[in-house]
Image 1 (cartoon, rainbow, N blue to C red):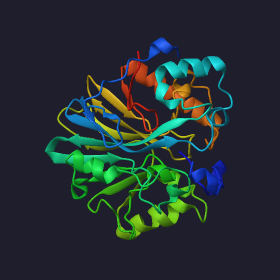
Image 2: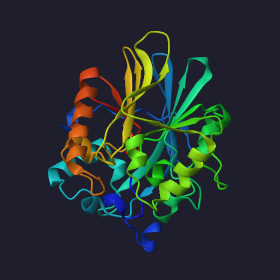
Image 3: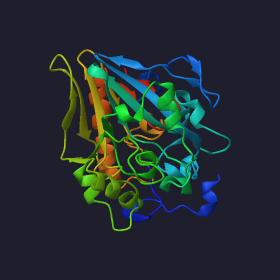
Length: 313
């Protein structure tokens, strides 16, 4: 979502902060099935052809900026429509409540992929502003996923709240048998001293697990040629941001990463987020992704909305 280095237009967070379309175009939320440790109810997985996509909540809490500061272009009408779509995002006053979510994708042959790695433990780079420690390890256990069985970790981008559990406290990869897939443009754009270099990129390069790709790449294939999991470039939020398309032929799920971070960007894709590296590119990317999703009847899997699944008409 952002980082604390101040580089590439990203945010610098004061220490005090760490404590801290149309409304009819989107379907209704999935209903709850089981209680979660944080008191919310778990959301069911989605079957997508031969694949199963499972949301894994790592953390939740208020953002350190209020929503009007984070999305200064949004109108009162935009906010009214966004509130109907994601009411839990609206806390007291102008506060913005958000989730920090990863997704597991299971395929034939016991293949397991993880998309993003959350805020991480206490002491991770995200701890300066996000609610750490995250609960991803416990979430994986509840889902019956052993980290040693994860063979691919896709990092949509290298902001701290998406890479926190990539490595352990000792710097060793948390998923020892996985390739970690990131766009080469994303690593190339990191400035010297960026937290992601020392925390994620350098350890994964040293272990031989960093897998840099250029553009679209197929990661899983199963059965029919249409059944696949692939990464696609979705730049703007960061230079090398990527999303994940889970294609089951008749069904499709798009794991969006931070192409959109609040429901206000669903109701009006032109609304920029303050910490996008290139707001105009991000707008074009968001419009294209939403247009493609509607045309395909795809379901969005979101990282920061207070509901993981968004069905588009």
